[in-house]
Length: 199
Image 1 (spheres, rainbow, N blue to C red):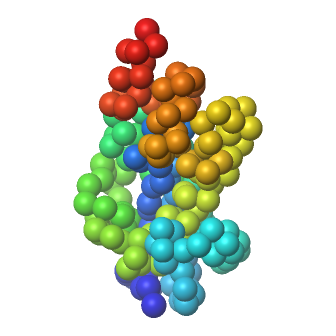
Image 2: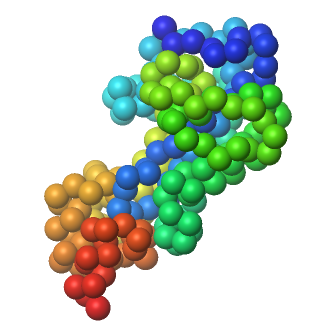
Image 3: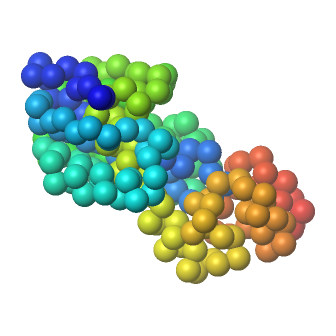
């Protein structure tokens, strides 16, 4: 069972992002604050859950969390500030939206830009160790998947309802055939090559 990192000691918010390695679409991030006694068998890193499980857990998270928030940074800004900084910014935006003030942050990964003066700890593979980070990974993933499915209706040629903007072979072939959409990240290498070809 996953744990709460600082149970009963701090108001702890877990943060994670989704879509960092995509060719298209925003990067999403979520922040989640659970009650100190929250427990749920099965909640885990979103990558280890099926689609049905992720959406089922999203309902549990949204019902049981003291507070949660989801935010994103669009491709234009990703191109301006780079994807690492955009991921940090998306987490900061999510934290801004929480209805409670977090006293300690636990962040999935090994890097983070400090948020205000709130102390934090980066935890490698934290989404498989701590409940609030796992919950944040589920929210960021499912909200981003929903967003990309909506974009796919406008741009069906890229198959975003299936690949969610990741660099699958089918997605790369679609970019070669149709060029870049307004939602592609032009600073990413694969997209830069295609942009040069179409220029």
